[in-house]
Length: 378
Image (cartoon, rainbow, N blue to C red; front, side):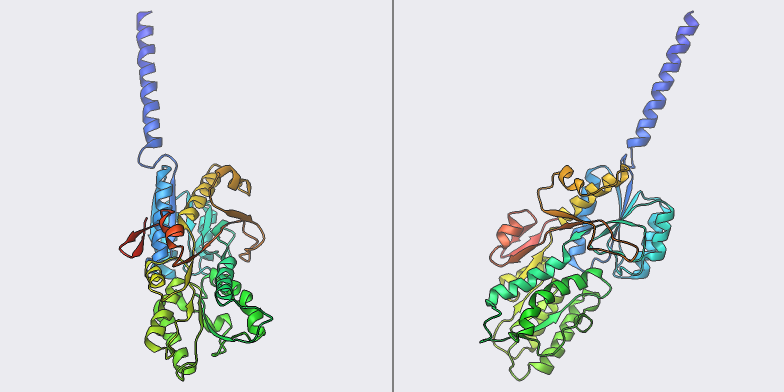
């Protein structure tokens, strides 16, 4: 009887040890909840550094391991990055594509491996691997830029007594969002163009004419220098430079400083809240930017990913269940990647000017003041 009791005690001890080892293996280095692959397009644009940093911070705070990679705007590099993450058996992929048309083949591997894919900020086309899309209301970004022009100049369709000259600079044709940004602005301003209140002196109003490869500041600079030299060197006034984002606005601002013959400061729009552009706004060289709170975009992505990994099928209920303190809409109609409409979570962007930088960017904790200029936190 004594031997039996001893055996039972030894067996119980062994079982406890085995359970402890099992628990350690579950909650040890892996973070206990799996590995997330975060794929960003480039470090050369300030905003993607913020996106990557916020996403990594949010997922790690919830116990996930994170593999964060940047592709230097190189499609082949991004494909290779994704292949490596699939081979490493990550549990979920969050991808901001360099080129939304270029990932069809590599994401077939993710689909075969049953790795869910969230398209982040830029829609990924031509693949059924994409389950959800998280972004901002990209058409609204352009509408806000166009409306800013209307409000600032006090444009009225029934008043043609004064006309204004405008030039457009759009984004990268490889970025699915670029068309939404441009169309939102152009559609908002088109009635005033049709009425002759706004005039595009260069005649370049089609997206294909005004697009900027890779959202490059240098490309935007060169193109605007050509426009100024060809159409404004005789003193013709440029009133508005409608730029889809801050990196292109930076190039346009440089061109205006160096090559514009006029004495006025044109209205210059932007998007992203890059530090150099915020400094330009304070110095009077840029008029506004549309700010997208990527910290909130990261929170939406995190909550969506957790729901997916828990085996759920997220829908509009995720918004109320998560209790976000910022606006977000669930959209199942607007974004079709040629394999079907992709369920989307769309956040609402904010217009930032020199007058509300403190309220919208500093007081909210996204930036801090470094002397006279804001610096991003994150």
